[in-house]
Image 1: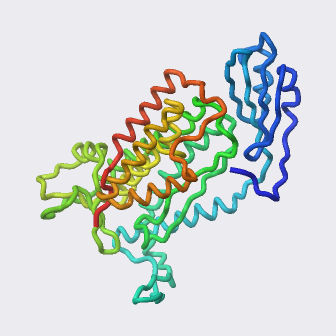
Image 2 (image 1 turned 135 degrees about the horizontal axis):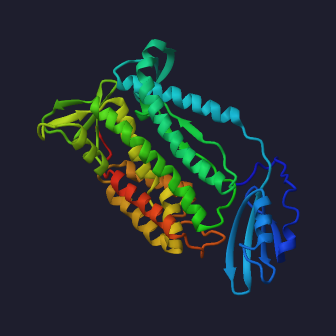
Image 3 (image 1 turned 60 degrees about the horizontal axis):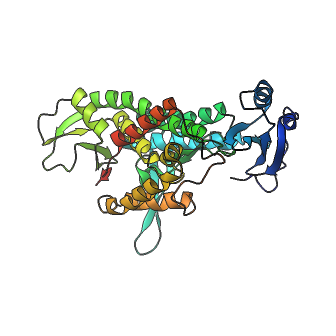
Amino acid sequence: MTPDSNSQQTYGQGSADYQAIFALCRVETVRAGRLVTGRLLPGLTPESAEVKDVLAAWPGSVGAREEPLGWELFLFEPAARRERWWLHILLLGATVFSTVVAGSLLMGHWPIGFQPLPLFGGWWVPVPVAVYAGALVPGLPFGLALVGILAVHEAGHYYAARHHRISVSPPYFIPFPPYLSVIGTLGAFIRLRSPVLSRSTLLDVATAGPLLSFLVSLPLVWWGLAHSRVVEVINAPTTYLVRFAGDRFWLGGSLTMSWLTRLVLDLPGVEHVVEMHPIAFAGWLGLFVTALNLLPISQLDGGHLLYALLGSRQRLAAWAFFLALIPLGFLWAGWWLWAVLVAGVGRGRIRHPPLYNSEERPGAVRVAVGLAAALVFVLCFVPVPFRL
């Protein structure tokens, strides 16, 4: 992640005295900012009062590593930049609209008027030509619930990064035509503009999003199931279905969904399935997206998490899970697409890139949080998410 070529990098002056604590130091420009790497003077540690004063005044992220010749510090100061808030607000508004349209279609309404645009060979694409405001209202619960889950997930990452003084962008929401995606969005993401300097910091940032989206999705699933219908279907492929624009879509069930269904609903027999309320579907999507992000591959949250816990040994699990997507693709072809997307995001790299301080290990509390996030992955994973 680098700054635009025409952007000017400027820095604050609050850390001008940092050189006083170093016996040796080097300053270099990296990833939209400057990185100071220095060895502390003999007798100084990160807990020394004068070092703490410098670190408290430093306007960016910090990391430390103990070496045979003394403590080495990493100080990153991001370049000043102006946020394009108009873009984030525009994307958020477009995503709310597209997910609300999807919610209306889930409720059996048609809020958009279409005209066919012929292509070739008899193929055509629908082009929106009218919006029926009244038909959008039934889609509000689904759209707001789904965007809310995505927002909470990204807010977890955002505030964890800010807590560690990492330069981070506001969330980018991705709208998508609902008649092509059923849900009206491809998700959301944030950009870390500062390098993550330690495994403890990486674990905090990686786990905050999935844990929050998991916790927010649970009550939505509970409420949605309580307002769902139990219907009789002969030879149903799964326990859950939604109706979208008149068509039926079957959904796979995770361990969490199975347990919540048993608590909330009484299914008379195997021939009875749950026709999900849109709020339940939004919660189901929240659990599914949480599991997708926790796959321990490359730049996904799970890749960050496993690298924070295992260091360079993460590459073994990353390759194992990446290769496991190949046979899973025979059950649901979407896993092949996901494998391609993950490889693309990681620029062909499946394992996690090293950190400046890869030797540092998270403490016991952070390890427990990381294991809890790994358990969430197991509880939310669905081998076959969708069936027609």
